[in-house]
Image 1 (spheres, rainbow, N blue to C red):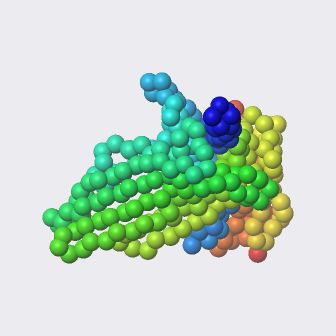
Image 2 (cartoon, rainbow, N blue to C red):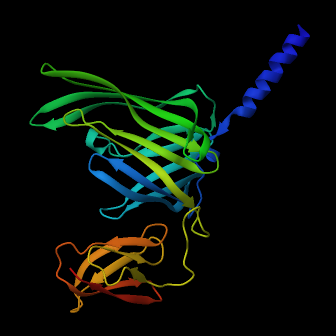
Image 3 (cartoon, one colour):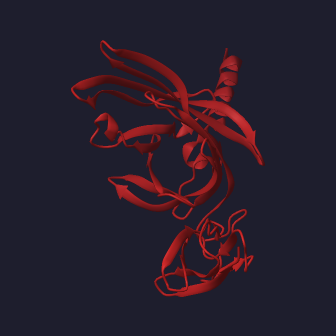
Length: 306
């Protein structure tokens, strides 16, 4: 009996040692960034996620992660680091919630096979015209196992599963079960692959897959990124007849003007400091790419030849 108890104790300790920490799987610090290639039904594009700021509410750190794209407005995700795990804020205003609700992304200690309740929504949704729909969403998290993703081995695959039920008596009633989100997390790195399913109960649902291409912090150089020592801007090829690549500081706004000084376009550099500009239907001629900070401004002449 004593030997069996000793063996069970050893196995228990070994199991605890194998548990992953959510803080290690999703490291958060100011300036940390991840660059991704994303494939969606609308095409292929790149974006960068950056931990832009942090604030303390009570005793809980709130991290603000901003996704920036070559086109379109940035998106912001709020992640809370609590003693029992990582939480994110979900805006459920379209379902009548005045304030964001909290979603448990993963508990602080994660073992393969673990399951947890991520969030629950049970509400009545006003569809307008006096029509009210009963909506129930039950979402759970699952630690699926370890998988290799590209050059990254032993990534923890975390899956978020949702059950969505909507009822509009006596006209309509439906229920759907689907994987809403998956992340493959490498310890000390973060999400190296992400899958997202955008469920639309009244329309066409879509999905996307993003792979991480590089990562780092704002204070140094990432695996494939670089940080210029001083403000500069350059372009190649130049002259060009299709598009050119503009090199400057990472995550900078680049203003394109014509000879009259009129702004004709605006692009943003990625985390490596590069951006692509395509004049499209604009006429041939001379343009200027300008980058400004609070202390400096630099300009590069661009020669566009159709």
